[in-house]
Image (tube, rainbow, N blue to C red; front, side, top):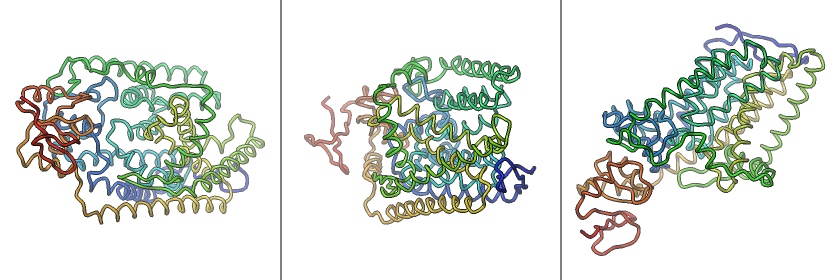
Length: 511
């Protein structure tokens, strides 16, 4: 493997030493990162926790595709969120069956790919040794349990931007590939488009944006983007928008990614300062484990860690600012060599900040899903990556590494607590008890509210097909329910002659 810049190795910030990053070291680092990701994912692979009907829809799409019963292009019931996860999961579901573990194993692979791309790009594009790249990436690679659960959530677009964004950076000089990947990423999840303004900002700072060659590359990328976008829209009429047998049917939720963003945007200028403060003091610490979060599926964090994390971030920003200013004093270029050498780390930092800014200025804090803030993980990754890349003093690098490893220790403790909690649980999962009971009773068709209907359908492998009593995403189940005499309905409240199973009642509708 060719030598790549590792760090500024002496007291002169603009002097770069380029030691050889050995192939063995990189392989060892990638292997260790894979082990850490599997470790943080273990609970969610072994247990059917944190699984709902939205995720079940992705699994059902994969099952229908594997069986050749449907051609899903977007998330069932809508015309945005390209069905990348469903297509990736289809072979696994075909071989191992429609289980939660089968579906999540594909998401683990996405996590592994995202970590590998991040580490390799930090080595090649930020001059870090592989071990230092792993340290910077630890906030993603060994994210605490609650954040890890979100990174394994089969929502159709939580983890994919972590793959698209480093890939787009690697393809920035290959415009046709860049445009194609950008189109797929944008259709899958709009956050992938953040790469464009960040890369353009970098080109403005380097003075490259308005050069003929740069403009030509952006034009080619735009053409490729439109071509892929048009190609996907061209096959949309042949897709099944609402499950098997709905080819050519218009999705109930029409419109694309832009329309989706417009409808959901709630921008109030006077609230922006409060939202930014709330993000900095609460939401970002939540994602990083600096605030206590307790959910039924995962807990993480300590409230006392918010202050040390804030102090560490302030120190990082001050030190990076001092090093950049020092480098500029001894360099005549707009961006000193030391700053250019850390380009991918700067890219991650800027992308994380922009993702957080877009999320918090367009949505009120009390209506901001955590999944919209996952890319904020890039903020600590970028900060550590930049600092390790341009820091000339060995003791400062060692102190930074020790601090990140200390954070990783607390994340590991949280994971150990969760593993022990699940292993010691004695009560079976109620929804699994219900699913098995329905299959044992030979129930084939029933009705339930959305958040139970499709979850139960997937958990039973479609042996029981639930129509939804509110939000409908699969038309086939609705048709079956209409044809079923004495349809069984699942509800919370007792009913005459109803059967109680776990915490719910199975009631028969009047004929």
